[in-house]
Length: 300
Image 1: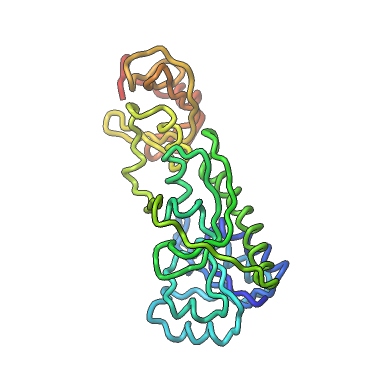
Image 2: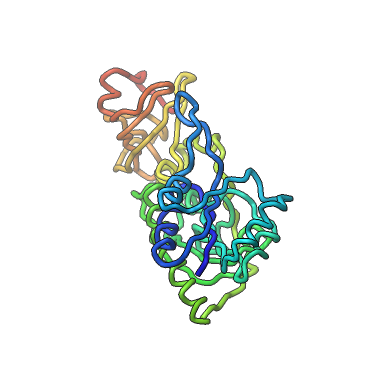
């Protein structure tokens, strides 16, 4: 099949690799290069780099809304289908109508749960036991299109959002491959999303990373694994890069104990294993404690 691929972050790479192997990817759309690093050097996305390394044309429009030139260009490609994975731009109906089979999206949740920009993180923070990938047809709503196929991934409390996203990305590559095979065979079936049971996954705001040690212990750990967390001590932010739950008999929630254990509810504690002081590099907690001491009896 002739495919136009639209994606930007690393999550979108496994599917692109698979489609290049199995089909003809005639063009790749990705977000424009962004300033990165100390020198604010314009850096293309990983999808941009990979497509160019495979001699595939790359286009980086700032928007596809009211962009008649891009609509006409998409039609001129005579592609069969558009495949989208975390592209980052809203697709107007004119883009979807450029392909006989419309646009298919690799969405990182089990729809209708967690429609929106941050499904992986929201699922983890909600203490879901599982998540997955849904291949869906894109419509003009927010991840409301008809579903085609799903795959399920279990969530354990030790996995980070980055690790989970990698699992989902490779599952998505498998599922989009199967979906396109089914389209070619005429086995293409869709299912409407249920009206009930949907939830929204808005992007993560910075203030959501503040840790609440009065929360359920698993929720404290899941937040760290999902989006990173921080606490404030004497007006300074300390980022908890990694941690684990341990048994703890301290009843004063939030109290800092020996070994960088922070007392939580239900006879549990959060043992910080990697920390980053504001404006400093991240380091192992034991190395941090060699040069920093909390006041005795500190409660965060």
